[in-house]
Length: 114
Image 1 (tube, rainbow, N blue to C red):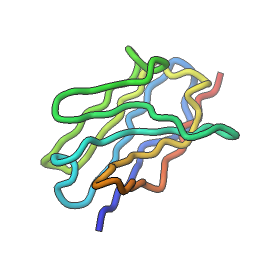
Image 2 (cartoon, helix red, strand yellow):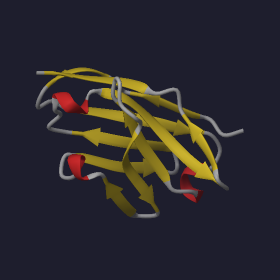
Image 3 (tube, rainbow, N blue to C red):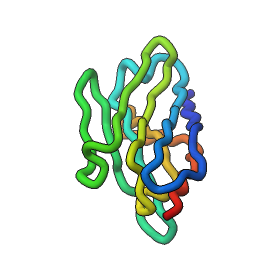
Image 4 (cartoon, rainbow, N blue to C red):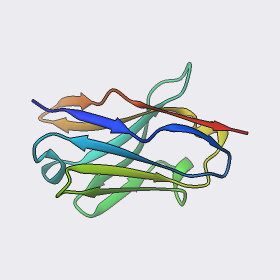
């Protein structure tokens, strides 16, 4: 049973920082690519970042501001978000795709005030 649990969201002023965490069950973190997505009100869910091995990928809108990382010992993935903007406001989800099955956490709300 794959379980993903996010935490770390909150309310922050523009220009501030937050660090999101995603605790994963078992050893999936070290075996599969892991991703962060977000969904803003009234919009489709959007891919934000991926970490696979030591390689990372980002959507253009967060490059240079967000950093994805993971700690395989703690079974935890992180998303360090700096220089936050109001348009970063969304529910953030961690994701893992295993044999064409998507697993999602429950999401954590990030609200950036202007």
